[in-house]
Length: 221
Image: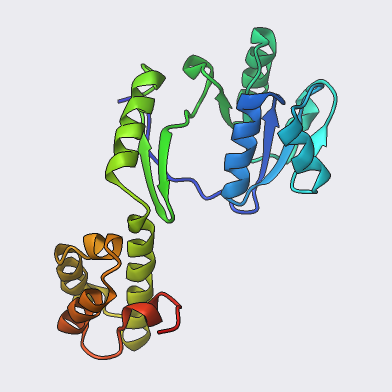
């Protein structure tokens, strides 16, 4: 295996995207969703990118890329159809030991981007190690059918339970059987069915008093 799988925290990190087309714009949006501070460099920019710049969500430099654009950046993503520019960005990033992704050019990257299924805090990444992005996309679509929006609510619930338990005790291992019991009670399906009474019954059975579903989810009864 060539690649080391990792989830990267880029909150407040400065990230550069070279390219202002549809692919570059998608990269910009994903970086923003993860909390990055994004700069885009491109002579041409599509309407979505222009709106992001106008709203102050990104900095957009409407000019050709230069090596100095990498200054202070944590990572760079290049998404252009200019092969020489793609190679130049890759070479420049290598000089600075910088994380670099060249869209659809795994041989020029030191990291690649997986296909993603996102359901709130649940993120499922699918990678073919650059061999077949089309197959990764197909698997992603299959997973999207299997893992619906109810999984986002389930993780929100589990996070609230974990936070409450930890407020009483810091013995993490003592909580493990409780979480396993909740998972095995098929609460995900109950959430999908919006069966709050049954969810409350399961939570009471496993955790006791004080763990009502609506309360844990921050909603009024």
